[in-house]
Image (cartoon, rainbow, N blue to C red):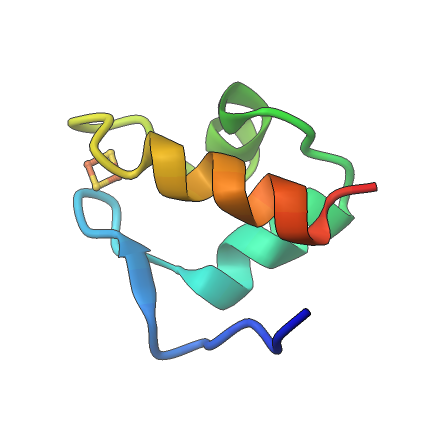
Length: 61
Ligand code: FES
């Protein structure tokens, strides 16, 4: 487990940082769609969706 980095932009399309995505996961998002509903990550080109899945695996429960 690592600390989410607020300066690491995971979703370039929507300018969403790793820290914002982890906050969405901790708020209950358990899928890329759930993350998109909360912070818009993954709702552009879709290129970051695999990274979103990895963050769910690392930080989801
Ligand atoms: S980089 Fe996240 S949707 Fe394009």
